[in-house]
Each structure stands twice: as C-alpha cells, then as structure tokens.
Length: 202
Image (tube, rainbow, N blue to C red; front, side):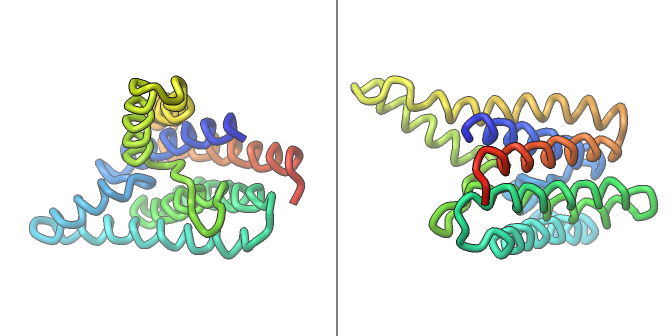
C-alpha cells in the first residue's frame, strides 16, 4: 500500500496545482494555506474570505463523508477512493456549466475524503498536505543520526517527493487543459480504487 500512498500524494499535488491555477491562488488540499487566506480576506477581501471558507468547509465535509462511507470495515479504502474519483469527475463535468468558485469546493471535498483512504482507529493519514510529514522526516533523520533506524525517513520523504512531482505535472496539465485536467486525476484515482479493491477485498 506504500506505493499507492505515494501515488495518492502525487495525485493531491496534481489536483492542488490545478485548483491553485484555476482559482488564482487558493488551495483545494492545503487548508493551512486557505486558513491564512481566510484570515487575510476577513480584513481585506470579502470574496476571497468566502472562497477560502467554502473550500475549508468542503474539505472537512469530505473527511466526514469518507469516514461514513468507510465505516469500521477493514479493507474499505477502495470505497473511499471511488468516492474521490466520482467527486473529481463531477467537478470536471460541472466546470463547463458552472463558475469556477462553485466547482472547486467539490474538488476540496474530494481531497478531504482522500485523507481517509488509509484511516485507522478513527485517525486519518495525511496524503494531501506535507507539513506534518516533513516534521516526521526531521524526527526520523534525528533518530538516524543518533543510532536509530537509518532509513526511517525515506518512505516519508517519498511521500513529499510525490506531492512535488504531482504538483509539477498538475501545473503543466492546468496550463494545457484547464479544469479538464481533473478528468485525468479522476481516472487515476478510480484506477487506484480498483487496484486496492483487488489487493485487499472489502
């Protein structure tokens, strides 16, 4: 499942880059950034504050919805990934008839849901944001220097690298295809859902 987790981090980077370019500087998976944008917007730009708050609320709703879809079943990650894929496909379809600020919250919902794919004991696994992961990289490097696991940092660094690679690909796709790039993301995550379903039946 580690390979799938890196792939999903890359997907998050891809989708975040597409959303960032389409919205002119807002995030669909990085809610710390949107929280800062919300705070600034409260004082300077009401429309920016409304968009940031809508993205944050949608992200949280995505987490809630995915937790309900997943339930307590082992091996139910594929159900959550299918939810993510359907949400991304819906956003890709709607952008032709709806304004971007109405479409991006659906994408943020998908990214919130993605974090529940590998949930355990009620806890989500960060796949769409890397601040905590980089903290863990630093901790693992310190452990390695002091005689502990020499390579414990590597899987975490791969997650971060996946996000960066996905962001680069997402920027290229957004500049070439606009929000139609979400179709690519939807196809990837549905493929991941089917792969996880085959590897670990629900």
